[in-house]
Image (tube, rainbow, N blue to C red; front, side, top):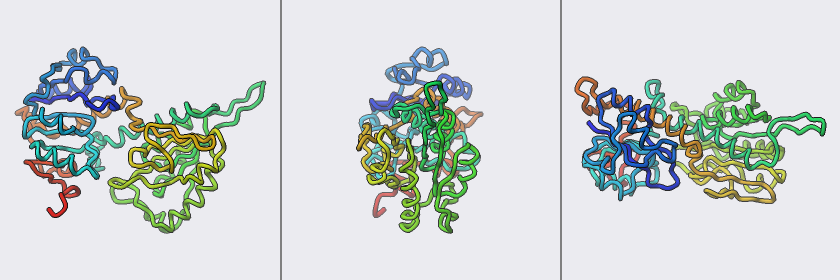
Length: 376
């Protein structure tokens, strides 16, 4: 059995789908590992490190591979290099990308979306959304600190006192919690808000204050899978009024709100941005889904009356070495369940919850119920 580690062709993607550590783990399973040349360079992993771990590095790495692992979904031009029947495992971004799913089905590969992994106990080590969001939340604060023209912690000096920065985190999932923790470590005064009542205790345990309209709708605002529900227009209006007043007093806002399969909810309007003090900074983690902040632009810092709106896509990629290491372990944990330990062969249980949740295509068709072609 052969696993191939593909080099990312998107120049904006510095991560890689394997590490020397996971190469060793795959070798221990009896699996052959091949790596495309230069796949790990942008993550600080030269080919020599993969070779030393037991991988074969070569231009024909993808040839006859039973499994191809990537960070991003393969483009149609990449699919021609994969054998029919191969498993292709990556962060697939399937919502709204029907043509890309059809291309993978037509290529005869079995595509798996790591971000659709169910949030169950045995899949925790495979949870790519959490591993990457954790780093994105950390990096968002670093981006904010770089754009902010002042210090984060309160400093009492002979020349006077520097006040602590006020940081407001909007959306307290994995990314938001790490943003809170990072901003607190840097000495900021932190507040946070979320539509899910369960996170209030987590926010407070990190030393931040929680801000929300705590009515009956708020108490029912979480799905069984732990995701945020989309709130009613009435609730959104009440929450917007509360946060609008709060935003005026903040130095830094970090927004992290995403709803699977939907455009990012608008949390900060242009009027709210204009109400902030000059020198304030907003960092929008949802910029790739349209953004939580009105006026945000991907890969740009927009300035409105002295207020900076930072739209950095792929924030986890800004800490590529750490992100690749964690993603590689997510992949190994999943692939380990697809291999028969005794025969060292691929043995996919198509009835397994992990497989059913993540499998997008098989035998030339799109099989995931959420992405069936219209009229199918």
